[in-house]
Amino acid sequence: MGTGTRMGAETGRITTNIPGRLDRLPWARWHWMVVIGLGTVWILDGLEVTIVGSMSEALKPTDTGLGLSSFDIGLAGAVYVAGACFGALFFGQLTDRFGRKKLFLITLGVYIAATVLTAFSMTPLWYFCARFLTGTGIGGEYAAINSAIDELIPAKYRGRVDVAINGSFWIGAAAGSLLTIPLLDPTVVDAAWGWRLAFGLGAILAVGILIVRRHVPESPRWLFIHGREDEGERIVKEIERTVEEESGRSLDPVDETITIRQRKTIGIIEIARTVFTLYPKRTIVCFSLFVGQAFLYNAFFFTYGDTLTTFLGVKQTGWYLAIFALSNFAGALLLGRLFDTIGRVRMISGTYILSGVLLAGTGLFLGSVTAVTLTLMGAIIFFFASAGASAAYLTASEVFPMETRALCIAFFYAIGTAAGGISGPLFFGWLIDHASASGDITKIAIGYFVGAALMIAGGVIQAFLGVKAEGRSLESIAQPLTADEPEPASA
Image (cartoon, rainbow, N blue to C red):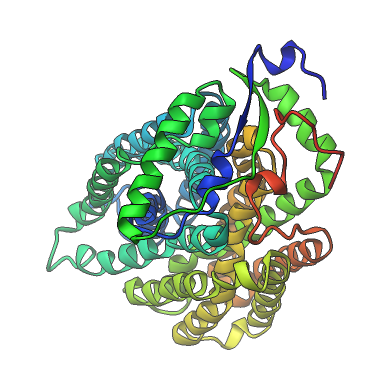
C-alpha cells in the first residue's frame, strides 16, 4: 500500500514498545476500572431493550400509554436498531479519526439525553424519534467502547473480558425485567408513570457510568499512530506505575517493538479498500456472525414479552424475562474463559451451531409449549448463543488493523443488525399479529427456523474461515496499516 496523500500527511516514523508493555501487564484493579467505566454501558442497552419488550402492554392503552399496537411495538424495536446502525457508522469513523475517549464520552451523553426524551414521550411519533436517538447513542458506544477495551486489556485476558462485557447486556436485561414488576403494578405505581420512570432510571444509571468513565485514559495505541507518542508514553508509564502498586509486582522489560509511519488522518475510502482487499475471508466471517446473532436476538427477544402475553396467558412477564436474561449472562461469564483457552474458532463455531440446532428444535414443538417450557428452552439456547454473539463483537474488534478497528466494528454491526435487527422485529411483529388472529402460536415457528439457519451458517463459516486470535497481540493478528513493513495480503 502506498504512502500517498490518501492516507493523510505523514507526521513521523517511530519505533515503540507500547503494545507489548500493555499486553504483558498482570491483571490489577486498574483494569477493573476500565471494565466498569466502559463495559457497563451494555447494561444500559439491555435495560433499554428489555423495558420496551416488557412494557409492550403498558404502551398500548391510549389513556395511560401511547396507544401502540403489536406492530408498533415491533416498529419501535426496529427504529431503535436503525438508530443504532446509524450511530455506529457515524460515530465509528469519528472514533478512529478523533480518538476513543472523546467519542465514548460523547456517545454516552447522546444516550442520556435521548433516554430522558423517551421518558417524556407524549405521542407515538415522539416516542419513535426518541428511540431512534437512543439507538444512535448506543450504536456509537459499540464502536468506541469495544475498540478502547481491546486496546487497553492485556492479550491474555482479552477474549474472556470482551465476551463477559458484551454479555453484561443481560444484567441490564434482568434488571429491566425485574423493574417492570413493581412499575407495571398499578397498586404500586400509577400506570401512566410506571413506564416513564423505567426510562428515567436508565438515564440516572448512565450518569453514574459517565462519572467513572471520565477517569479512563485515551488508548495509547491510538495516540502513537496519530503522532501523539509522548502523550501515549506518559499514559502507559502511569498505567505501569499503578499496576505495579496494585499488584505488588515489578514489571519485566519488553523487547518487542513495532515501527509506525504516523498519520494525522486516514481516509475512510482507503481504509475500506485496504480492509476488503487484505482480509476478504475475515469480512465474510464477521458479516455472517453479526447477521446470525442480530436476527436471532432482535427477532426473538424484542417480541418475547409480546409472545408470552398474546399466546401463553402471561400477565406479568418480568420474572420470565429475568430468568431468560440471567441465563444469557451466565453463558457469557462462564464460557468466556474458554475463548482464551480452547480458542476462538472452536468456541464461536460450537456455540453458534449448537444454539441454532436447539432453536430449530424448539420451533418444531412450539405448539405444545407453555410459558415455563418456552422460557426454559430459551434459557438453554441462549446460554450458548450469548457467549457466541458476544464473541462476534470481539472478532470484529481484533481481526482488523488498528486504524480501522472502530469503523470495522461499526460497519459489521450496522450491516448485520440492519439485516437481522431491523427485519427481525418487523418480521416477528407481523408473525405475532398474523398468528394472534387465528390463535395459532405455531405460525411464529418460521421465524425460529430462519434464525436457526442463520446461526448454523455463521458457525460453519467460522469453523472454516475463523482466525485463531487467542493470546496474540492485536498487532500480530492484523498489522497496522501504518506499520513500516506492510503485512502481505492475507485472509
